[in-house]
Length: 172
Ligand SMILES: CC(C)(COP(=O)(O)OP(=O)(O)OC[C@H]1O[C@@H](n2cnc3c(N)ncnc32)[C@H](O)[C@@H]1OP(=O)(O)O)[C@@H](O)C(=O)NCCC(=O)NCCS
Figure 1 (cartoon, rainbow, N blue to C red):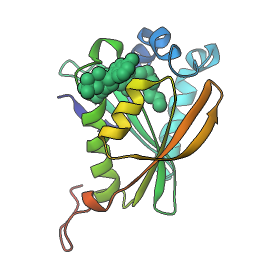
Figure 2 (figure 1 turned 60 degrees about the horizontal axis):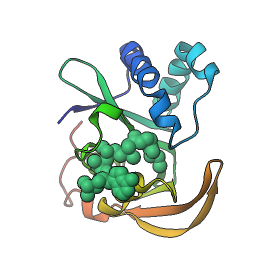
Figure 3 (figure 1 turned 30 degrees about the horizontal axis):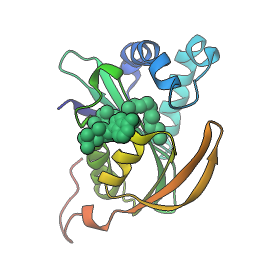
């Protein structure tokens, strides 16, 4: 499995390559980031790092043996013990359980490293792969929701089963 790394300044080139190579693939399921995102990637990267530094978000990259980015799993809008989960996997790395594995790993980090108790997620009805990932990762449907790309569902997952036993120390 790839390594899960918290976003760093030096990830910028590999992350940009990942987003460029998979732009068409991602846009088939979720809204395209737009040309502006790619034109001003460096600025955007710095802004994400500042948000992460402030504890508002945690951006994780799935990094392969050669330093290539194979996916990302993000925790956004961290507040009151909760956060929004988002993820995307490189087209060439899909279909072998990577998203399911990475979501579970990040649930563990959310509980034990970031002190969160709940994660929220959403997926459009036509995104069967993403809905499968959420269901297999223990998320349950809590309502319907309208996305810019179509109707979808809201999901929630409590993290109590990931919490380290009382007295155990979260790894740094
Ligand atoms: C959705 C996404 C993250 C899945 O990544 P992945 O690594 O292939 O996911 P996994 O292999 O862990 O699991 C996907 C599951 O969905 C299933 N699946 C894939 N396409 C499917 C389809 N059209 N219908 C039903 N199930 C489907 C797979 O069979 C797999 O289940 P299985 O292991 O029981 O066979 C990836 O396709 C992606 O990045 N898509 C574009 C961005 C996106 O949609 N992000 C989520 C936003 S909500």
